Image (tube, rainbow, N blue to C red; front, side, top):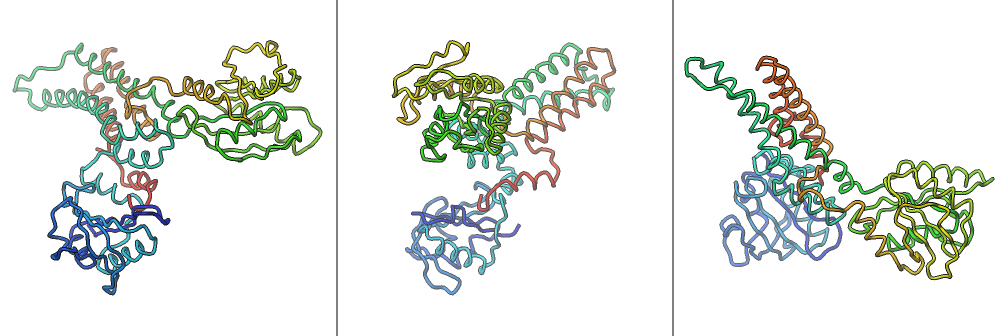
Length: 453
């Protein structure tokens, strides 16, 4: 394979920036642009030990005093010879280093090409490779922990025993058919049924985590609802930590949904601050109210904001009805810093009611606890939550094939009918880990990655 090179850190001013190189012959290329301070060649320094030296540009002029390290294959990230230059984090320095490597014989790495080589060279399976980009993109500690678990092989360890059990069934069947004179004992119907049932239960358990996985990866769609001037925009600003939405005393200031992300109680919420729910003759505001209702219907969580300093009005009742369209609801009795006059009994609420002051930022810890209880409760061990729809779809196909094999066996069909479904399930499981994968699908997977990883 070609020697590839890329800047592996963000293209911004920083203390340190890293240039990564990989491929057979990369050490001799690095010798052309890096000279260890103690003399000798970079290709001769001890593996996995940082060495200080001079980094030169294409013309041999010094551009940085940096640290370099080499990782001989196959015990490297990609499974082939690799090297890294840890430079001062000037984009100019990193760019010059990259151009020097190109002049010495390397080429620009593509998106995810380092990790793709690691996958192709057997350094990781596909669940681990996909976990790399999930870890990079993680927006909460929970998402990061799950990605680290998958990077460590947690998902593969759940899938492999299922694959192996099906492989045992298939191999035993072929052994009996191909070697009839060897007196090989056939698998009993009861044992095969037990194996298939256990495999189906394992896949059911994994697939049951897919909903939680989408919360980890994409966040919880959340609509902030309430009548005008209840404090919805103030709540959004308090949760995101800056003035994202305009806040005024004028009713109807928010006329469209304002969207932002915030981590609340360790859970990523995709917040939509909506127009105040009320009847209005203003055409623009009326369209905003309609969007508010649609946002609630599509939301997993509705935060109903009520002005605790004012008696309930018809608009509050309408907002509450809209909030009930969401799968979950939390009621926030806002403006707790003012005298409280609102009587909420007419709403007949059976959901958490929290007292907060969005303007003062008080009471939000209780909201964090309520959100965590809804979406961050105890679940499967880290790494065993499905966050990837490709993997989930392959597991669904495998589960249906296993179910078909079990039903065929229970219905008295011949072993070859059972074998056909078992092999179909094995093929689907192979797509999860990458044992069997089309080239076009492989390319699509690594397109998600950034250059340099």
